[in-house]
Length: 95
Image (cartoon, rainbow, N blue to C red; front, side):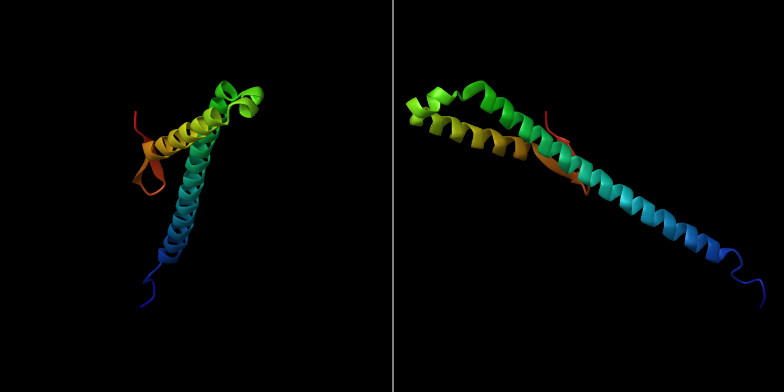
């Protein structure tokens, strides 16, 4: 019974290494996608804040500030709703 299983141990080790590397690559891809989505949301929020909120208007017109806050919340919710999961770790933005 000598010679049985010869070379299979190396294949098992290689397969386990490749599976581990593949899993870690998937985790990094998922993390990158989450960071990108967060960055897009932060850019949208910052752009909205810079374009519509003036410090003098904040003190003079609290109703307008409340309306802007509601619009900001709506935009954030819509941006989050545009993101949906295609498969684990991969998201796609609807146009």
